[in-house]
Image 1: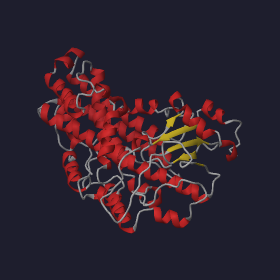
Image 2: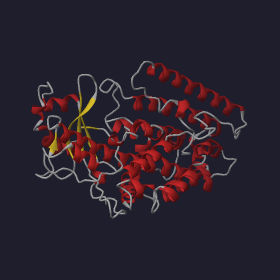
Image 3: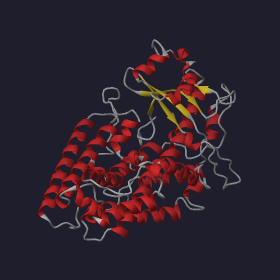
Image 4: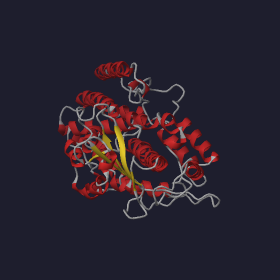
Length: 440
């Protein structure tokens, strides 16, 4: 399934609301010969995971080209952690509503049936990744923090000095995206099944579910049931991400302690409170269910809030952006569109049907060009911990910066050592590969 942007994807099956789906999927599992005692043992051991693309259900497929019909689906995929600690797909339903025309595909089915079902999941995963995980949850959220910062914090404010390196070029790159990528006749319209307005529908739906806690990296990992290193030992996105999150938060606490000697000082900072309110009112449309704070009353909460802003703009964006060419350049692994509807019966799929379902040459070229360009660093890129613009002159802050850089260097060393001799190294969250801001 890949691990380009794992956080929004895997859900441990510990919630009762999924029990109906589980029973539908697990009934045929004995035929898979998985060498386990019982499907229900999977649940007790926490070895079964669910990936549900419900957000795509009912989204309009791209109709901008009358010569090419394009299709979207909203799959549900079950995955199983096997004896080798590898998480593999074991059942796929390509659309949400069960029925005779929406079969559950299994590894024991004909190889082309199973292959096409996996391709449909990967296509849906690409749409979720590109529109929600990447566009909304890094680019647009970082812009919200950036605009609020410029509007409410004067340049001499310590929080402005902390945040400004992490909004470098963000508004500019988002403006370019609006003019060339997600606009009418832009790249989404040319290459993606969500073009022609589907990507807008997805962002609108995802905004209703976006929460502050989901941007707090450790809380989101735990909420997804992915926090146990013992149960899921090879989840480097989690391991590296938590290290970087803790390093950033430690730096934030060090700087906050310099300027805010008590929680009362935090409460009395009118400009800080205006910044937080701006994010809530204009960025989140005053949506209480988002969990975004309207005010901040403690130094601990302030350090977390700033960590969210900086981690999102730096580490989270790096994790979901700079591996896109690695994972999406092989078209069947991340098709930007599908040109045939999902199969409604088993045993009907041929290799010719799969080729006809995949994007044509033109759309594939647009897609390849996009994921290659998005995966490139800027010239003279500024990475996490690099502060060439000397906003702070106070010696205690400079010492805090030096400590931060040392912490990041230690993380780089740990990741470099771990990746030695690995066939598939994970380096997207190594601090020396994390740009300070959303700039591409």
